[in-house]
Amino acid sequence: MGLRTSMMVRIWDAIEKSPFTPADFLVENGAQVTLLTVTFVHRPEFTFTVAEDHNFKVLITRSPGEYKQTEKNLYESLNLVPDALIRWTVTIRDELRSTIPIYSELDELRQTVEDHIKEHVGNPQQRFTEEEAEELGRKLDELTAKFQMMEEQNELTRQEVERLDGEIENLKINLSSYPKGVWYKTAAAKIWQAVSSVAASKESRLLLAQAAQKMLGLG
Image (cartoon, rainbow, N blue to C red; front, side, top):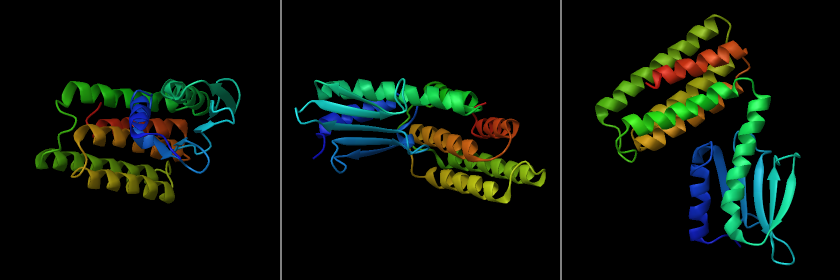
């Protein structure tokens, strides 16, 4: 049993209004015994589940909670779920800011992407032209060259470079299939995931984020 399509539209709208992008979440409608399960893909232990108790009230379980690692709350109506979901995503952002030193810089990258789309992408649903895709492809190639240089300077390991190169290759492939708005948001999410996962120093991670921002034409 899951939520109606109209309710799922409201769920996705709430995610769009969150500090993150749809690519940052796995959304399962009617998963197992729950009505809805939302998982933050970068930290799978961060989950938001919606179920009904024996009195048909709405039971929402959030990890992290506002004050505790996991919190459960009862609500009278499913109409309150989207707002609760947005509050949960804000809690995730605050948690990441306190546990990942570079998160503030990466959070700024997300905002830069949003501002870039508003200012420079007239129609976010429009596809890249062949010339635009080629230009962005060249910039992404420059970024992979940057990874190689950082490996030579022992700032990144071979495994980390391979992981970053894989993400960049996926972004290049998606240039021909994603609308501009979706591509830029996905690029920011992928860069966030890749940069935050490398075991480099804070300075190296910040350098990576700044280099990625420049190569994407955002800085």
